[in-house]
Amino acid sequence: MNKTNPKIMPVMMAPRARATDPIRLKAWHGAALAAFVVLVSIPAFAQADGARDSVFTALARWMPLLLKGFIFNVVISISAMAIGTLAGAALGLGQISLSSWVRKTSWFVTQFFRNAPWLVLLFFAMFLLPFELRIGGIIIPLPDYLKAIIGLSLPVMANVSEIVRGAVVSLPSGQWEAAESLAFTRTQVLWRIILPQCVKRMLPPWMNLYSILTMATVLASIVGVSEVMTLTGQVLAAEGGRTDLLLPIYSTVLLMFFIYCYPIARLTLRLEKKFAVKT
Amino acid sequence: MEAIYEWFRLLYDNTGINLPFIYDSYDRGRMISGFFMTVKLSVLCLVLSVIIGMAGAWLQNSPLKWTRRIVNGYIQLFRNTPPLVQLYFFYFAIGTMLPKVTNDWGGQEPILGGFAWAVISLSFFAGAYNVEIFRSGLEAVPDSTVEAAEALGFSRFHIYKDITLPLAIRVALPALNNNLVNLVKTTTLAYAIAVPEMLYEANQIWSDNVNVTEMMVFMLLVYFVLVGVLVWGMNRWERALKIPGFGA
Image (cartoon, rainbow over all chains, first blue to last red; front, side, top):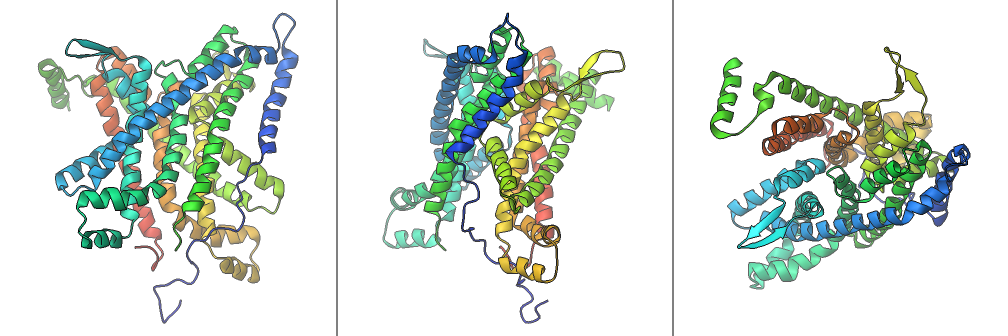
């Protein structure tokens, strides 16, 4: 060991980025993936007898329905993200509130919803929300998909809350002190100095969360919302339980999500690099 | 014990708070087996996914171009598709293509059941994240360390196993911690292919007793505790592995 300075171990230095980005998919990777899906469907294609149409015709026939289902998934994800972000931003600001009571409550709510599984929260919203709301004579119906959106926005809220708190805490305290010495009020400091700087830091994790949420929207199929996974099951049932269709159809659903989420992941990575704090 | 059961039965009679998994021996048995199923599922997936992560990180630095490409393809595919669809894909699409075996009663059953597919699918899902986590840890190990090891005649595998990986684990632990917590929460998905884990059993109980509220609150609390235990354990491990002079 180093005798002069026993506390510092000479083997490790600060993390640094590698020169080349090892995860870079090109267009042909997608083509290879599609080719793989086609390839695995070929034995199934060969099995199909004359009475039934081929896997490709069946796939082509159901594609519009599956795509419609997928668009519904995207709608659910965007709505849940919007609600979750608004609620989460409020909760996150609550976590840095000056009142210790507000701070502790927000912290607890955040931790509670962050540590609960998404599926459990979804069940929670599904079964515990009434099917309609009565507000002074006006009856607002709460259809299943609306409940699913609320159920999915709960974990999003908690995660956004942590993102907001993390971003605020990550700013150097000099920013706060400098702003205070210029006689800004706390509200002004927060809205005009701290939060604008946080947006940059919050964007990549926020986009990451969105992609996680999009992938979680299929959970709604378990509680009976007719999104892409439910429709997939129905399509398979309508085709009379053909086992040769299983692989191509599930691959198609996988591919849909991949095509939607992969660009988001790439963009997140790019933004992360662009916004990286130089040390 | 009987007195406690009796108390909960009274609680139900007097307040309407129905907790049959405490006072009813049948529901209690279901709940306990569900709990242990979740624990078993979580532990198996944790171990397998960490192994996949370590192996993947090793293969990612392989001198062979195609090995690297396949590993990267695997990571991107599993990170950008929903775990539930992956689970269905494995269970329904791949599971039905595998040969069937004859069980003790002469019936045909698939070679791998729901539990096995849940373990495989969830491990691969979490493993894809773990590979990335270990990679970022490996990047923190300076080249000079590797060069020194090479100069001492270590093989590539020995350098990875004895030098870079132990260092990388220490850097990667906080992120790994996060991912493993996520994995424990993702085990609830096994519900979808009827693996009798905790959420599944809870669903059975609330279907029989119509006590959704109580069961849901109980579920949230149990997962809260389960995740808490994991986080506590991981934090202890983190402290035990801490390199003096690094971090706060």
